[in-house]
Image 1 (tube, one colour):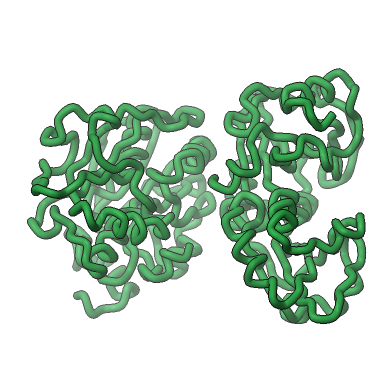
Image 2: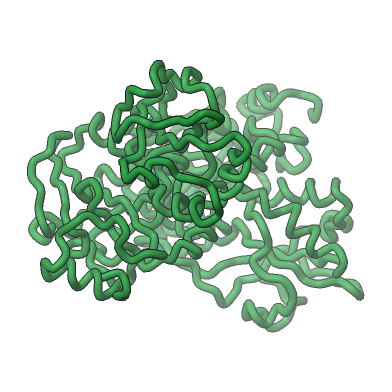
Length: 260
Length: 260
C-alpha cells in the first residue's frame, strides 16, 4: 500500500479496500483532521481556529458544498476519501459511517486541520527521539488550565500533547518544530507541568501515560483535541469528523507543509 | 498629539477633535485597515483573507455586533474611533461619515487588516531607505497579472506596492520585513516588473510614480489594496471601510505585531 500514490489510496478508500487507521499510510504526505459543519456555524469555527492557531492550524478549507479541498486535495472527494467518519448531533456521537454522501449538502463546509504526525517524523529523522513512537503507544495528552480565545459558540481549554525530550535536545526540538505552523509549530510550554495546571504528569486525559527517563524534560505542544473539545462544548446541530486515527491523507508533502 | 496615549487619541477622534489622516499619529502603534461586513458575507471574506494571507493579513476580527477588537483594541469602539468612514453599497461609494453608529447592527463583523506602515518604519530604523517616504509621496502601487485565490463572492488580482532598494540592501529588506506576517511580510517579487505583468514601472495604478535610482532594484510587497479590489468586485450589499489614510490606530505596538 505504501508505495501507491495518494490518488490510488483515495480510490482504495472509496471502494472499501482500506477501512483501517491511516497511520503509516502514504509516508511523506501530510495527514489532516477533518471537521465538516453547516455554513451557519462555519464563520464561528473559522474564527475560533484563527484565534487559536497553534491548537487549530488550518491546512485547507472548502467553500460550502465544495468536495475537493483546493490546496490539500484538488482531485479528492471529501465525502468518500476518508476511511471512517463520525456524525455528531448536538455534541453527541450519532453514528460512524464509511462515507458521508447522504449527509453532505451544498451547505456543508469542510475544514482540514493539521496534526503532529508531520513534525514527529521530522524529529525522528533529525535525531530527536519520540518516546511514544519508540514504544508503539499513543501520545500522552492533557487538558490544561489555559482557555482558548472563544469565538461565537466555540470555547474550551487548550489541550496539549507531551513528549519527553533529553535536556540537551530541547532547543533542537523547538527549532525543528517551529516552522511547522500548520502542524502545531513550536512547543507551547517546556518543563514544569504544574504551570499548565497538570497536577500529575502520569495521569493523562487522553492517550497513554508517559515514560519520562532521567535527564528528560517534558515538552508540551498544542494538540488537535483542542478543537474537538470546543466542538463538543458548542454542541452544534451537526458536525462530521473523521473517526480517531482514520485521517484524510492530503496530496501535500511534509516538505511542502513546512513552507505553508 | 503624538505624546498622547492611544486611548486619548481614540477619545479625541470620538469627540471630533481629530478629523485628519492618521499617518504619523501614535508612533510605535500599529495602524490597521478597517473592513466591516454583514455576517452573511463574513465567512467568504474571512476565507478570502485566509487564502490570501500576504495581501490580506488579519490583525483582528470582532464577532458579529462586537465593537471592541479583542486583540487590537479591547477598550476601543470601532463605531466612533476611526476618524472617517466610507459606506459602500453594492460596490459603489454611498457616503463618507464621521461615525457609523447608525449603520452598525448586531449583525456587523469587523475585520482589521495589517498595513505596510509597520515595516516601513522598521526598514528606515535599520538603515534601508524608503524612497516615497524620503520624498513625502504615496507609495507606487500596481495591479498584477497574478490572481488571488477566490473565496465565495470574493476574487480579484494581487495588488503590490513597490519600493526601490539599493542592490546590496535587498537581502536585508527581505530579512527585516519577513517577520511582519501581519503587515504583508516578505516581498512577493524582486526585480523584473514584467514577471508581474507590469509593462511600465512608471505607470502606477495607485499612488505616485516611483523614482528608481541607479543600482536600485524594484522590490514588490503584497498590498492592502488587494482586499479593497476584491470587495469592489464582489459588490456586497453593504461594506463599511475607513476612508483612505484615516486608519484605525490599534493598541498593539510595532514590536508586538512582529511576534503575532
